[in-house]
Amino acid sequence: MKNKSILIIGIIFLLAAGFFVVNRLRRSDLTEEIELRLADNNRENPISIGNSQLENSDAVISFYEDRDYEEVWSNNGKINDLAEEFLEEIEAVKYDGLNPQDYNLAQINEFFEEIQNKRRILKPKSTPELVDLDLLMTDAFFKLSHDLEVGKISSQSQDSYWKLEAKEAKANYNELLQEIADGEDIQDGLASLYPKMDMYTKGREVLKDLYEKHEEDTLTWQQVSFDQSLKVGDVHQSIPGLRERLQFWGFLDEYETEDEQLFDSTMWEGLKRYQMENGMNPDGAIGDLTTEFLNNSTEKLIEIASVNMERMRWMPEIEWDKELVLVNIANYQLDYLTEGDTALTAKVIVGKEYNESPVFTAPMSYIVFSPYWNIPPSITNGEIIPSVQKNGNYLSEKNMEVVSNSGEVVNPKSVSWSGKDGNNFPYRIRQKPGGSNSLGLVKFMFPNDYNIYIHDTPARSLFARETRALSHGCIRIQNPDKFAKILLKDDHWTDEKIHAAMNQDNEEVVQLDRKVPVLLLYLTFWADENGEGHFRPDIYNRDAALIKELKAGRKTKSVQKT
Image 1 (cartoon, rainbow, N blue to C red):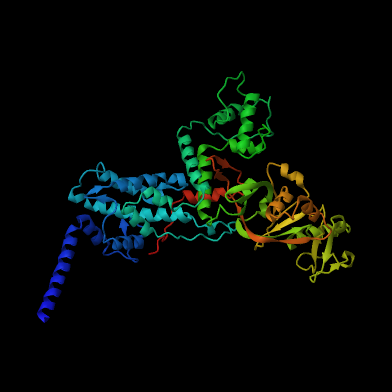
Image 2 (spheres, rainbow, N blue to C red):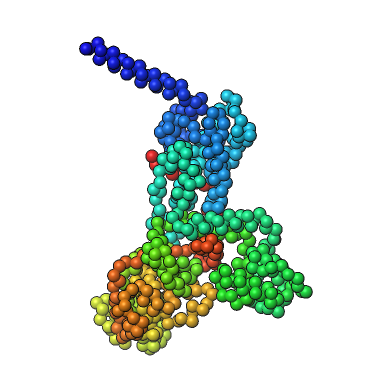
C-alpha cells in the first residue's frame, strides 16, 4: 500500500513537472526576453528605454509578473493589431485636450519604423526592439489611463480658486490592460475612464472638428482692436479680415461687396448670429468683447477647449440625472437640473476680478426671505466705517444698524467712530430687510467655508449687462421668486405667498425638506447635448497658466497602485 502511494505521488510529480516544462516550452522567445529584461529592475533601478526612464516601472514590472511576462503588443514576432489600435488612440488624445507626445509617442513611432512595415516576421536580432516596444506601450497605457481618469495636472495646484476635493483614481489600470490584452476593445476600455458626463464626450467631438477646421485654416489671424465700437455704415481697414473670419466660422456666406472696408447690413446679420452663439448681446456692434472673440484663431480655441476638458477630468462624480443647482461662473448662468432636464435657467452676477467666486460644491438646506445682510468684516472695514466717518447719516440712509456681539441693536450715535477700523471695531453692521437691502428680498443658503450664497439684488438692471463680474463673491440671481418656487416644491408656497414672504419687515427662515447639491464651476468651454461647442470669456484670467502647464512636458509621477 505504501509503495502504491509513493507511485501515485511520483506520477503526480512527473505530470506537474511535465506540464511546467511544456508550458515553459510554449513561452515565446519574446516572453523570455521580457522576463530577463525585467529581472534586474526594481524601484531603485527603474526600466530605461534608450536615454529615458519609464515613468511607471513598478507598475510595468507588476503587470508582466501577473501575466508570466507574456508580451501584449506583438504576436509571433509581429507588431499586432492591438498595438496599432493603441497607437491610433495615443494620437487621438489631442481630442481629450492632451498632448500625444506625453505618452511615449515619438519613441513608439521610432520602433514602429525600425520594425519595418509593422507586420513582417522579424529576424532574431529585432527581438530587443519588440521588448522595448512592449514596455514603452505598457508604460504609455498606464500614463494615459491616469490622465484620462483624473487629469494630467493636479487640480490642487490651481492657486486658491479650485476648492473641489481632489479626485482619486479608482480604476485598476493593471486589470484594465489585462482585459484589453484578452480581447476587450481598447477604445472602449479607455473610454471607461472618461468623466461620466455627456459634456465631456461631446467636447471630444467639438475638439475633433476644431482640429479638422485647423487643417483648412489659411487665415492670418492678425490681432485687431478698436478705439470705439463699430456699427453698420462704419468703414475700417480691419473689416475685410473680420468678415473673412465670420465666413470661416460659418456665420456668413461669401458675397460681393462694393466696398470691402464697409461694415454693411449683410455682415451685421452674420455678426449678430455669431454673438448669440457665443453668449454675447446680439446687438450687431463690434465692441471689445466681440473683437476679443473674433481674434481667437482655431489654435487658440483648441487651447481653450483643451483647458476645460482637463477641468472636467478634475470634477467629482456628479449625479446629473438627480436634482442639482449648477452655476457656471464664466457663463454668468445658473441652471436648475432635475431628472436630467433643465427646469430653470437664470442669469447671475458673480464676483469681481478681485473678489473671485471660487469653484466648490455644498448642499443647499434653507431659504431666507426678507433677509438681514450681515455685512462681512472686510466690507465693514473697507467701506462702511470710512463712509460713516464722512457722513454721520450714512447708516440710516442705507437702512443699516449697529449690532453688538450679543445681538442687541446699538444706537450708532453712542459708538465712537473716529480712529476705528475692522480690527478694533467691537460691533457688527447689518442692513435691515427691504427693497434697498443689498441681498435683495431673498437668499438661498448652502453653508460653506467661503461665505458664498445665492441671493437677490435691488440692482436688477445689472442683469442686462454683457459682462457681469460685479459682486463681492456671492452669486446674485435674476428672478429669485421663480427659483424659490421651484426649490420649495409645495402647493402651499404659491406665487402670492412667496412674494409676501419676500416683502416682510422681519426675515423668515424656511428649511428645505431635502438638501440640494449646489455646484459652482468655471468653464470657458463646454459642449451642449446637441454637440455644439460654446466658448466664454476667461473673466478671471485662469486659462493661460493651465494652457502652459498642459503644453509643458509631463512631470514624472507614479500613477499605478497594484
